[in-house]
Length: 358
Image (cartoon, rainbow, N blue to C red; front, side):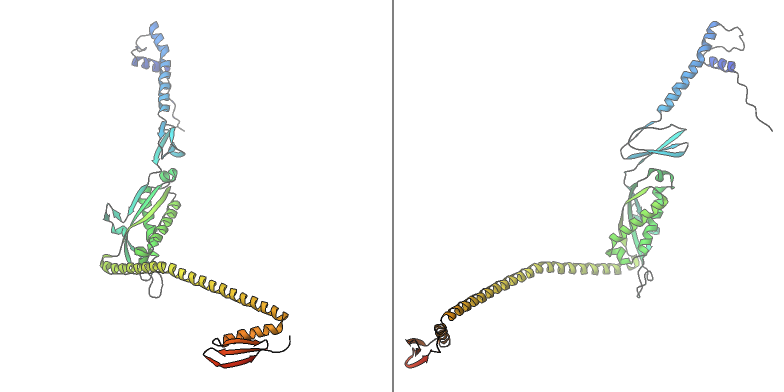
């Protein structure tokens, strides 16, 4: 087998050439070198070593770099990722051994879908909705809607952002955003996208987009997804505008009714509270009257038990006064009361009041 021989190294020739570079004479033509030449030849190796040392020091010095606040540095050795460094003065192997990529991680970046510099991009913005048919089957009566979306994001993993996907800011993020939005819009009726549930569409699109980006290991964190403009197709825009206005009128009437309810309810509550207070006052009054009557009855019973005949006469006279309020009375004796009509003095009614023994 053929094996290539290594060339023989002649140290003397190398030293002679270096001396020639620094102004010395070559040793091939002058066999008797002077003492000065021998002295210069002895210094050359040290000069070479010094140059090499200085070169190595300078090479190492180029490895220092600074990472600003809000930045991170991804470090590579021989092209392979090795480490991530944060803010401050750092050092890493200079090229060609090492390399570094510094990325702003706290910068809020933007991606617009369906529009570029205010100009609509219909290939991205026109989407099919998932409107149900008359029987309620979802997606059987789809509509077309024009959607323009804004995505705000930053970098959560420098390693993934730089080395796991190709063009994460352009193709990867754009394709993932369009896929997510089309899935969400395609699962909802057009009213949800146009008016009713825009906030829910934004939340679901953000969640779906973040899931796809994490699956790709893109290193991107979605901060916000916002629907910029949502339009009905131009051919039916007027009809959709009428529907929107009708819904707005409905919402306005509901708001007015709610406002009226809020103004009437406190008044009704006050009236009800007053009625309850009046009822409570009447109840307390009735209780007091009943208790007074009960006390009076107990007092009469007590007196009756002491003197039944006298108490019976007194109760009888009080009852007659209530029955005949215009009739005066004259007590003739303990056993008889003379009732006299003031308008006719001749009308005298003797009323016996004796009813038995005590």
